[in-house]
Each structure stands twice: as C-alpha cells, then as structure tokens.
Amino acid sequence: MLIALNKPFNVLCQFTDRSQPPRATLAGFGLPADVYAAGRLDYDSEGLLLLTDDGTLAHRLTDPRHKQPKTYWVQVEGVPTEEKLQALRDGVQLNDGPTLPARVELMQDVPALWERDPPVRFRKTVPDAWLAVTLREGRNRQVRRMTAAVGLPTLRLVRFSMGPYTLDGLLPGQWRVL
Image (tube, rainbow, N blue to C red; front, side):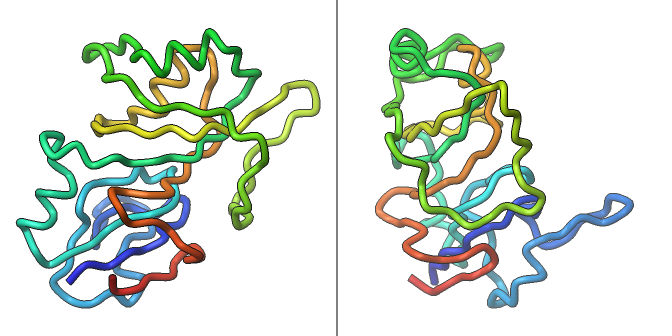
C-alpha cells in the first residue's frame, strides 16, 4: 500500500511524540494501521509525505542510490539573483560537504497554496520570492541550509512531488491511497 498525505505545518513525521507538551503527529489523520513514512519532512515543512507498509518500496523511494527527484516550492526572503540561483544549481558547500547539483527555477507566479497556520511573517521592506528546487539527495534540512548558504533564508517550504507522485490537489491533512 502506498499513501500520499499532505502533511500540515508543525506536524511530526511519526505516530508518537514523547516531548512535553506533545506535538501533533501522524496519528491524528486516520491513516491505515501498519504504514510508516517513506522518508522525512521536517516538522516546520509542509506537503507531500508518502507512507507505505512495503519496506522495499520505501527503500526505492528514499535511498539516495535510486536518485528519486524531490521537488520543493520554497518561499525565500530576498531577491534571488542569477548568481545565487546558479550557485544553488551547481551545488553549495554545507558543513557536511557539498550538495549535488540541483534543478532550481525562479517561479514567476506565487503557487496556488492553502493558507498556512500560523501565516508566514510578512515584512513590507523585505521582498520575497518563490523557487522550485528539485533534489536527488535528501540531507537533514537540506533545502533550508542551501538557500541560507546563498543568502536567501527559507520562509516556507512545501514538498510538491517525490518521484512520480505529487500533491495533486490534496489539502493539508488529506490523504489518498495511490
């Protein structure tokens, strides 16, 4: 079984949380028993999370050797110059080594997304922009660290696709069997 879930902002990609106070988890979405997340999506990130009961499939979807592309829509603070975009495309140096080259495009229009709760902070004096970033690796908080490395801090991060699977109209908290 393979399930696509639109993980809301501030939800853990696990079914339990031992912290105090406890945070929202996947247990609150009525998912079938015996599925688990194929990969991770940070607590403060949103979007497509795939869940499965098939370990082989989970491995194929997440192991870097299989190089499944993952596309993120990223709202960044600042104006992305061509030099900054090219640096992201070429790969940037992070504290755990250089990233692989990425596909990075400046989105001409703000993507049609749901309102986030709480909303992203808005500052009249600081411009922002949206990027479409496609990676074939998946390090911890990689997109956020990459954009920060080129001087474009991430304000909002939404995973739109993973391999051939997309959000395809799912609202936050909704899921479907693929």
